Image (cartoon, rainbow, N blue to C red; front, side, top):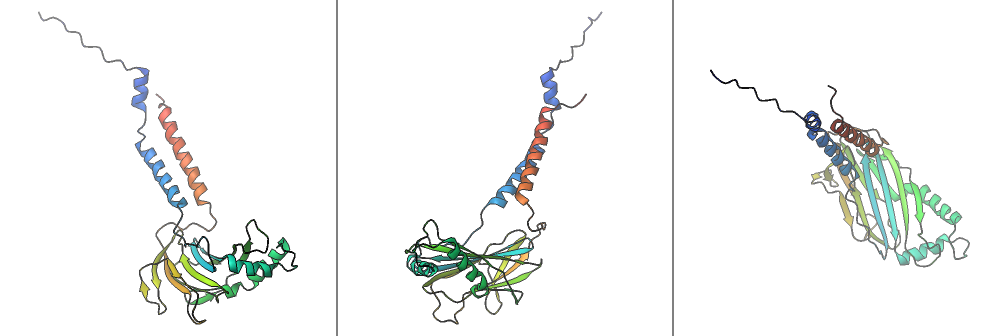
Length: 268
């Protein structure tokens, strides 16, 4: 007679073991969170810009064009070095009291806005496009008439229809004591720089920065740059849409959902 053999008891799982077994895999949610974080980092990474001279001796000029969404922004910086700044500050001090007040700054800003069309020329697909420029005079902390460098900034926006576009920029006449001139294109979403164009329209390798280290030798000498740009396959986002805040909210929601799935056991 064979001895009876009792079956071994089934292993008992503790509550902690059951919850561990029921936890969903976090790999996919966390990978998604990491992907969104990478998108945020890409959107907040500064693009390559022009290289302003920190202590200019003359008047340096930096023109940047930024296509983004369905608009283009233009930004023209004029950096007045010490000697030309002293001459210009004296001219700004209309009442000759040795201090440049807010009213005198406003007068100078209005004058730059009125002659903004002389400062730069923009062509889109061969057609001259008018740009309404705003002007800002930044004297820093010194409102006096001494030889202290200062900055004039002109900014404006124009509409930019989607599609392949030829963009040409040319700066206006040189100012007295003109130094270097740089023209650059800083393409934002969804635009990409396809090629740099020469005067005949021939395509060359993309070169976003065009630099002229000295003033014009004659009024006819060009200070210009031409670019071919095109939207990429990225989704088109309307101008002014809060991209980064929206992605940050999405990132928070995804992270919260992942943590909730991690700590909450499934209903039995």
